[in-house]
Length: 498
Ligand code: HEC
Ligand code: HEC
Image (cartoon, rainbow, N blue to C red):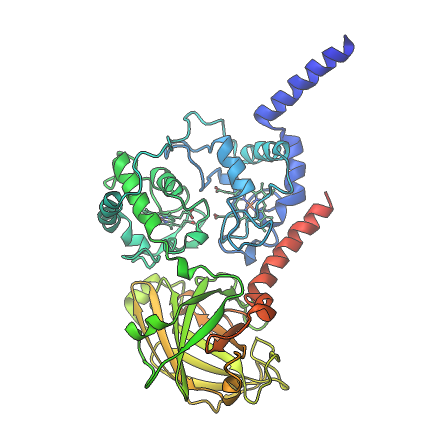
């Protein structure tokens, strides 16, 4: 009898805990796992916050971006909260690294149970005095399938109401300088890279964003009847279907990608064009330079795509990347969009300096005394430099005769680099020599300058198709991995002192 009663009581207690979460227990979860980024009192000012872009949420305002309750309902649903904390499927294909894609917010489903999540949600709501939502989430049943007709209608709507921020082709190169409610500079998402979407990239997810808006940012709700830009429910589905169709899969960095240079007869092209169709793009993550010198914590560039052609004497690279701004120092419209002073946009290609033995990789950050690197550097005033570096402190003019030409169009830079083939790349080319190659980029409107820029780790270039790919796979994207490992380490350290 007593047993049955205590069972009933414990069921009752756990039911109330499930329904509402326990603020006290939630505080403990928060202090164990969340405060390092979100701050001791939830104000978004934890010790890691200054290094993170976007910054961790300030919970004291009660504004949440990735919710599905209507635009005029401030409180997210419990499911919304659970999704924000558990995260959407992984972006970097690193096991366990779910979360809000392309941000430092990790997914917690492997660390926190459902009860922990309810408790921490109760604690978060309490920080801003949020009440339970009065309105249910918006209806997310698919109403318009992504047919050709729907996508076509969506294209026109997009040009009317989205392109001012997201750019004509959706690359995030809008014509507006945007700040969010927390005072941070924000950039509209590059819709051609769905792997960077925080809250899902299916049409239904985009429909939810367009219907609800992204609270705290300038992305409005298009369901608000008060708005001049209000769209019908069907129109919001059409524009979501169109936005989802902008996915450019070749831009998603692959694992262990190797640039396979394709041989052509005659002169190499020095501008983008049909000849390049012979080669395929490989894409790589860019990581901000945070190792030495002036470091970058707020990168605007996240990936670069590269292909290569060669003939008997020369090699050409087509380097393409999305950049929200064309950075022309002194130009008024560039200054209007810039974070502060406008510097030039730049791109660099780096190789081991000759002579070089296959299998030996110099230090990717500018080489060293024993293993120098050669760098071809282009900047958007047209100047090109060839550099030999033996570490950051020892930089001189290099022996390579490189040329480069770039053009900016609707949010994308395309730069063609050309230079002499180095002898040791060709010897034994029938088997394929894996030549280390790395890329560096600068977004001058973001204050990138000197050591402050984004870069890839060593990747590999192979002439003539190459043989096996495996030995060097691990090296691709090493810089990104370092950053991710640091974050996992942070999380692991927190986990241990639970
Ligand atoms: C490594 C840093 C880091 C840690 C640790 C972290 N967060 Fe976050 N969190 C972020 C960042 C950055 C954002 C902002 C993402 C954005 O703007 O889309 C964020 C956003 C959020 C949001 C807001 C989502 C929305 O829709 O607005 C919630 C809720 C949240 N975090 C909960 C938590 C909880 C709970 C924990 C601990 C269990 C936690 N976070 C730990 C970095 C972190
Ligand atoms: C006034 C500017 C503005 C307009 C207009 C605008 N957006 Fe956005 N959009 C933004 C900003 C800023 C972000 C990034 C918000 C953030 O992450 O903080 C964004 C993000 C997004 C995202 C990414 C969501 C995610 O999960 O990461 C999608 C998808 C999107 N917008 C679609 C659209 C579509 C479709 C339209 C037109 C119907 C539109 N936007 C109109 C500014 C705008």
